[in-house]
Amino acid sequence: MKIIKLAQSLLHRHFWFVALFQALLISFSLVLAWLLRFDYSLPYRRMLLVALPVLILIRLAAIARFGLLHGWWKYTGLSDALDISKAVLLGSGAFILAIHYGLGLKGFPRSVYMLEPLLTASFLVGVRIFSRVLAESVRLDRASSKKVLLIGAGIAAQTAVREMKRLNCGYAALGYVDDDRSKHGLKIHGVPVVGNVKDIPLVIEQWPIDEVLIAVPSATGKQMQRFVEICEQANVKFRTMPALSDIISGRVRISEFRDVRVEDVLGRDPVKIDMDSVKREIRGHVVAVTGAAGSIGSELCRQILDYGPRELLCIDQNETGMFYLERELAARNTPTAVVSCVADIGDSERMLGLFKRHRPVAVFHAAAYKHVPMMEANVQTAVQNNVFGLLNFLDVVRDNGCQSLVLISSDKAVNPTSVMGATKRIGELIIASQPKEGLRCVSVRFGNVLFSSGSVVPVLQEQIRNSRPLTITHPEINRFFMTTSEAVSLVLQAFTIGNHGDTLVLDMGVPVRIVDLARTLIRLAGKTEQQVEIKFTGLREGEKLSEELFYSTEEVCATSFSKIKKASNHKQLNDLPVLLEELRNALYVDEAASIRDKIKKIVPEYSSPSRPDAHEFAAADHSEKWAAAVGD
Ligand SMILES: NC(=O)c1ccc[n+]([C@@H]2O[C@H](COP(=O)([O-])OP(=O)(O)OC[C@H]3O[C@@H](n4cnc5c(N)ncnc54)[C@H](O)[C@@H]3O)[C@@H](O)[C@H]2O)c1
Image (tube, rainbow, N blue to C red):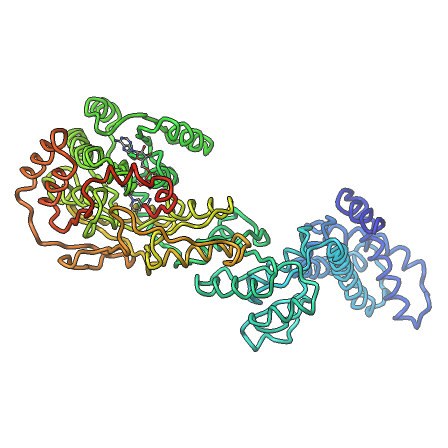
């Protein structure tokens, strides 16, 4: 082993060593060609000795010309073989000319002109292949490597196996399993395809497999779920390949396997957006994001930065959140000027100052209070922030030359059963009723995003980590889910295609039962359902069993993007300003119940909770109910 390593280090570091070694191969080829030509004898030795140094010089020059004077032979491939053939051909031409016209060796045997280059080329290619095989076998030091079985024997799995052999990544592939029967029995890169995916438990019984690697980057959520279930049956650790997009962008290597995440199992088609159209709207402009420190707002800031705005105005009242956001965005070192404003969007004076100074052309409005039970207990605050905060903010935005505003809405705005949802619906109505001139206003409605602050996945994960029972409000409760990055990409696309007053709705796929999500999280945490208790705590105030994306009165219209629909509602709410004024007047004089009544006048579909006052609920079993968070 030491000798191989020493030879490799000499090859890599010392050009002269590589040149000398190849010169020896060339000499050996010439002598061998001579022996073959003259029945294993060496006549005309003077001619041979004169020709040899000339041949060596010419061949080394040709080898250098094709960049082959390096010793990284363990990475050799077809391109090296091609370059060697070209170098040998070029060298042979030059050698024949040198022998005939330079040295005048008229009797030089013609068959040697043929034999020598064939031998030289074979040795130069052969030594490289040998070196690569040797290097790979040394690296495939199986005793200390993790022995793995790959799910999938397609291009991705094959590339992963090649990388494992090439890099010292501590994995040794023992086999593939693939449902494509035509691959069974094949050996791909020296690794056998041993059966179907369902055979994993059998393979694990017979072979010393440490880990299963899921090498199917195109797997759907359902397929991923099946792989996970089979691995669990087999009681074997499993990991998956990074996303194709990350591999292609060069952020990760194909062999950097990672734990399976909940978003892999929920699996949705990757979102494709027309990035050029987004770039056109953002590049070189001043863009503002409110609620910038929040889950949606911060992702908006990240993605908007990628499109190169001149200035990014981040607005949020959460000082700590802004501190972290500023640090994160600064670390990206983009030429965009990032301005962090710790401010309340309802503070008109402050907003006016900001908008006058920076004059953003586009605003993404994600600032809002969103936690359903918390807002049930704080009805005035919810309305003040989500409705009147928006109204005040819109005045500032409209009066300062801004061209577009996108309101982030929620599926909770549809037939709302909570104050939070109702305020989001009022927001949509406000947006739809804005005057047509000047500012283009669009609402974008969508369901839950995974991992947003206080949402169900992080809460359940924390309970699993702390070995506490998982609290879910109802066995049948379900929600739409998408990743934050997916939702925000579509919001940016919606921003480019939305017309004034539109409510655009993102395609959320099919809803997922929270109890199924919990079971998946248990499995992904390496535990079994027997080890983790699931407790049903009863629906919370304002919580629905299922969310909807459209009102029955809305017409679902296609847009130029299949994942974005338009909700058309022909109902006009002419008295909205009057009703809003009534709501404003009720805010600080009336009880929550009366405010709810005023909300109902604006959103007749709003069904308020049957309990007399939500404050009582909040005081009652706060901790138990909070743990079962299925909020936005
Ligand atoms: N998270 C989800 O799953 C989800 C899904 C669909 C829609 N939405 C909607 O997106 C919006 C943002 O959600 P999120 O998950 O990012 O919430 P979040 O709580 O993570 O972020 C909201 C941010 O807004 C800020 N904010 C609130 N009021 C403000 C004010 N008056 N002035 C300045 N800043 C203010 C908060 O400080 C917070 O940082 C909400 O309207 C929510 O209903 C969220």
